[in-house]
Each structure stands twice: as structure tokens, then as C-alpha cells.
Length: 269
Image (cartoon, rainbow, N blue to C red; front, side, top):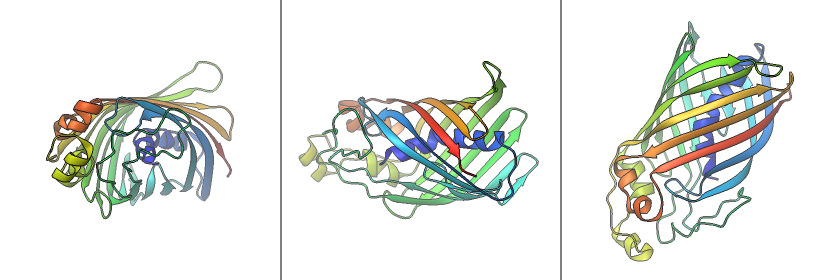
């Protein structure tokens, strides 16, 4: 279930683009769907698994939104291209047994055996976005109150537009992103203490915070009808700093992390 976080990082752009494409609605709206997501078996791995995931989004006009991938947020400021407000996200647990309930291909990874379980993390913080022309700049900071108990900051920019191919225009976006994290975050996922070293066979490692990763993401939104929408997204991120130098990554995984997803959604109302 930790794949929901990776889905959040890439599909949030898609969800926002879909919302912007549809006519304004002052009331509640609910969108349901499902799709396939191909990602590393854990963050830092070099093996990939395909998972089939549900997707449910709830929104109230252009003010409030809630979904597993986008989190729960409220746009306190929403005018002249500026959007800002509080946000809460959930990052599901990483289990040492490598179990992935939604996976449909591959086997559970044994790379994490001997390392600590990281409990589900509830992250609270705020976000700000500024749109000028076809470019949107974004920043989001969150502090976990459980699980990894670290701080996470996501910075990004995306260039958006439309392309007419066959029928309705395809809404696309592409841009760079970077993630910064605290010591607690990196230590939870990439550190190896003496006990874990003995149990896992990995050398001891003290992971500190800093720049965690940088990369690029791209999304294509393809309206099929007034209710149906297809979303394709892809991304590449490179683990860097103490996360990239972790023995878990260097000896058992890879700094290079790719993602590919295809989702189909239906707007109920």
C-alpha cells in the first residue's frame, strides 16, 4: 500500500488537470476509477511490480478536495492564479516482509528482511501554487505525526497545454520536481542501525536529511466523454544525498526510479 504515496506524487497533477478541464461546480463532486501502476517494489529498489489500484476523488467546488493520492486539502487562497492552504496526506507503512496487497505481478521483495517496519505516517502541512501563463510553480511542506515522524518538502514546476489529436483535445503537463527531507525521514527508510545490520547483512549506515531526490514527471489527460477520462502519467526520479548513498540502494537497489501509470475515471456527479 505504500505505492499510494508514489501515486500521489504523479497522479496529483493529473487530478488537478482533470478538475480544471471540467466545468466549474459549486457543489460536491465524486469521481471513481481504477488503473495500473508500474513502480519499484520499494523506494530505492531496482525491481518493478505492476499493481492495480482503485482511485476515488471527492471535491467541493474548487475549494476543498480529498483523495488518497491528493490528500485532504482546502484552498484558503484561490484567486489570481494563487492557491494556498492546509493539506494532510497519508503514507502507508513499509513492511520488512515486502508484502504488496495490490500487486498482480512479481514476488514480494526479500531486500527489506531484517530492517525495521515503518508504520503508516500521517503528514500535516500546507501548500502553495502560483500559475502564470502555462506554467505552475508549487511548494508543499508536511510534518509527519506518526510513522517516519520526519519533515518532507516537495518543490516543482510544470508546463501545461493542449494538443488536438483525435477528437477532444489532450491536456498535457510536464516539469521538474525535487524533494527535501529531514533526518528522521531518511533514517526511517534508508538508515541501518547495528541490530538491523546484523539481521539484514547490510553495513551500518546513518542517513541524514537534505535533498532526497530530483526528477521529472509528465501527464496526459484524455477526455473520452463528459464523464469518462483516461490519464497516462510517467516519471523519473534519481535518489540523491544520503538516500542515494544508502547501502540498501547501492547494494540491493538503484538510485534511478521510474514510474508509469494508466488510469480510467468516471465522474458520478
